[in-house]
Image 1 (cartoon, rainbow, N blue to C red):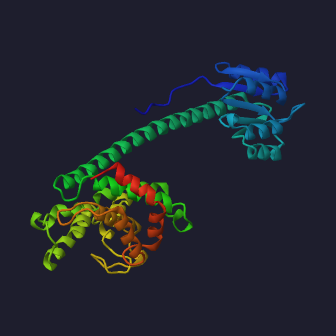
Image 2 (image 1 turned 180 degrees about the horizontal axis):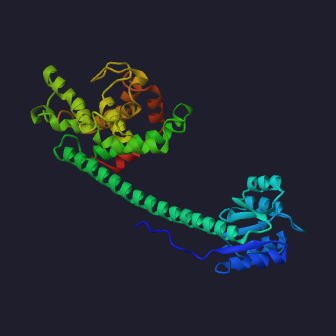
Image 3 (image 1 turned 90 degrees about the vertical axis):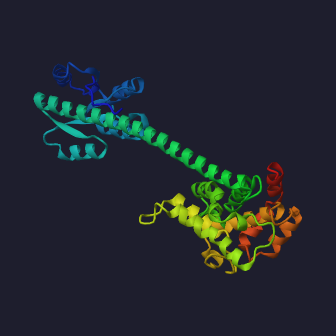
Amino acid sequence: MIGKVTDMTENILIVDDSKVDVIMIQSILSDYNLQVAYDGMEALNILEKNPNIDLMILDLNMPKMNGFEVLEIVQRVPQYQKIVTLILTNSDELESEIKGLDLGAVDYIRKPLNLESLRKRIEIHVKLKNVSHQLAENNAILEKTVEKRTNELVLTRNITIQALAGLLEARDIECCNHTKRTQLMVEALCEQLSQKPAFSQVLTEHYVKEIVETVPLHDIGKVGIPDKILLKPGKLDEEEFKIMQQHVILGTDAIKYEVQDIEVPDFIKTAIDCIGGHHEKYDGSGYPVGLKGEDIPLPGRLMAIADVYDAIISKRVYKEALGQDVALEYIKTQKGLHFDPHIVDAFLEIEAQIQQIVLSFKH
């Protein structure tokens, strides 16, 4: 709950070498917690020992250390940044007023002192400080609330994605753990590529997280493909293959369903790029659009190599599983044809890591 501004008893430091002026100021501000220093050095000693000073009334013309020197030090020390400083000047010291304000003071009071004016100015600055303090507290509460709600939304989103992917595997659309393996392969690829100059500015931590989290959705459109085609034990004929290709369009349409007429959020765009691009080929011979080279979105290019590799090493209704050596050889032969050459190089560089992922999440 956001609180309201409450009255607070401020801790005020009076810094002035004139004992008469100090007594006058004390009399008009007797309801505040007051401390007194008669020169700049004494003021700094008090500030060092008492971090709770809220407001300082600072004379500029003092022996040992003048007010300007005090302001310069206060401005440099982080723990003093919260102190509201009002400077005391003589009526003919316009340049001193300007210099004091430039050094961080928020207001000035001219001598000889007008006690009623001094009181009013102090009250105003105390209220402003209390409002600022309350706003900071309210902002902190709001930030925590937003963070909590955001985490809940992300968790809900990830659970939904994993549930959808689990339903696909439950139908034997894909072999067991296909989603987990491809997700970890893509993550490893992103980490490897992010170290290379061509990708280091693109594959930010945030973008990599988005890509990895959307990987399980790459074949979500297959829920719309009839079982007689999806689970056919033999090779698909030309007409059946055309129907199978529609799973990419079905998947992207499903993701875009509620965001067709508004700006697409980054996460949804990344999901669309992954789903829509993972069957495109680097030489332009893929589907559904026939995109070529880097016109294929990066999530799609990454998913393509992980998906094909896992398909080769996995048993499917239409084929037996082949060895990882066969899969690697195919990846090599398709460099620049099916796959992005840079991604192929990175994939081969982490070959041992890929093999470990396969061993950790067997079929």
